[in-house]
Amino acid sequence: MSDRASAPTAATGDRLGVHVKRTEQLLIAVKTKALKPFDLTVPQYAALSTIAANPGASSAQVARSCLVTPQTIGAVLTTLADRGLIDRRPSAVHSGVLVSTPTRAGKHLAAQADRATLAIESTFDDQFGPRQRAAFVAGLGRIQDVLKNYLGQPSPDARKTT
Image (cartoon, rainbow, N blue to C red; front, side, top):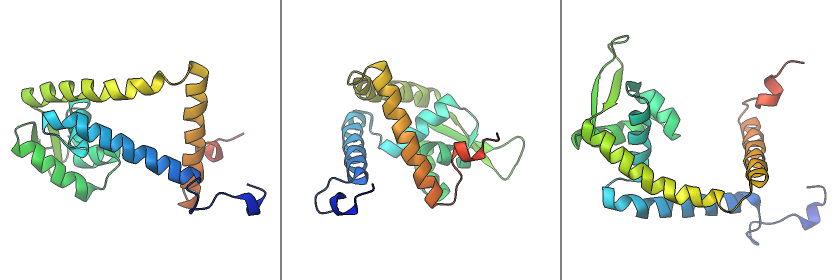
């Protein structure tokens, strides 16, 4: 923003980061409510659906997919295993690495929970035409690139060679 005097402030609540955070909090609250009948938290659902889609995934792979730390995913996977929703076994390739596969009950629950969350997220698409949606996703991608730059991670455009 070139005119710093008119820049949004934290006090006005009009910063883009505030809008993104409010939206994220609302999304989590709505998903939490939708997942309650399945006795799943949002992180448990994310992990279970990741494992259902990628049987044999390592804890690190599940953590990356769910955007959480390996320490966090460990507790989530233990809970899912204790409930009989996933099996955890040493990897055939690396015996020190546990891989997770969904049980029959886990696959069934993941599918049911996915329908509930998809019903929520599909309403997002109803708010945009195809071009608007693509522009919105592209805008979010640009924001992600800016944030990655602050972390010292190059954006995809910076990695391209000319």
